[in-house]
Length: 477
Image 1 (cartoon, one colour):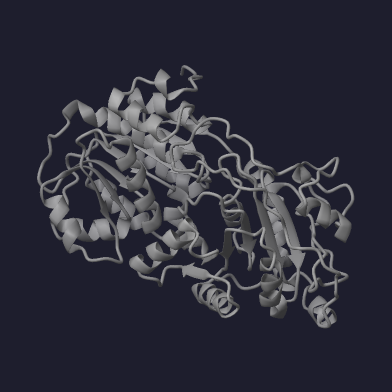
Image 2 (image 1 turned 180 degrees about the vertical axis):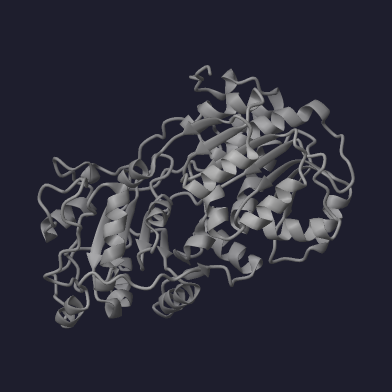
């Protein structure tokens, strides 16, 4: 198979209206996943791409599909679609639709969205006359198919975006039922951040002799973010969150919890403290989720609290900090979480609050990222005497162990500490390549928590006794 080394969109065999729309978005050079994937999709190959959110993968599959649909522009069949894009969440589906509408704004392609949480009547009405591109979540799509409102027999293209997350959310049966209704002669593209055996099985079942492209492995993505772990009793996490948010350098902050109930509690507590906040999770209506996300994007609210499932697909510029209020029970989720900052060449910081019962989760995260996350002791709720990290193994260890208060202050001031790549200056820099997904970030240099004298918490002894390697029971969104 030939290698594709082109870097500029103008080198692609794309129609002038598409290139004009891309150029007007300020994009000239492709990201690595785009330069690898687009030529193969244009050539008609099935393709599986391993790429994180934020690498430009939406353009990687949508631009060539738009180009190929133009061969029969305007020819539609009632209740039918010519291209089907499946996404795991409503937020990601909306994001994909926004990007496709931007790329095709000078064309006459009809795109529509089908997802749950809103009335199905407008979706049925739009599908009645047929569309070129249908972006859908599996559950609502299958409902409308079963009611006879959507026909997939004429679909020429299938895209499965974030396949691993769709499987995590239990969509495998729905996906199989949907694919059974598609023509066998079609082009299929699948993107996934990870490739567990379950996703490999989908590849073998749904794709024919696919080309495989891969960028930004998990460990590499994690290394781009300045990371800290803060050891804290569970009972003092809210106090620690209030403390770090007093620092105005934390301008746009995404906060993660493991549960929907936890997300609500954290957001409500921040509002009581006078810190503008919103929450998104599976129990929120689509309108409520979209409203919170729009307010976060526009800067109306400073903090957005989210669960892993709800946050997948969030694409917000200039997130300066990610705070893991609770560590995830799946280490891969940690990489996805912190990848919401340090996008498009901007700088970013992650702060992970770890109570003694979460140390097993921390060990799993350090295994998958192959590095120890430096401990920040310089906060008033630090638990003394705890060894947070996994000892031994093939993990990159900081040469000096824990960081002192002076070291933490240096990091938060953006001063490099020799010998540790995690401590390089985090000022803004121009992104390599262009990514037509709305990430034209020019974020200011983020800082960590404002330094203060460390005060050991009085409950440290009790928590230490509870911390001897017991893993908390997993919680699901």
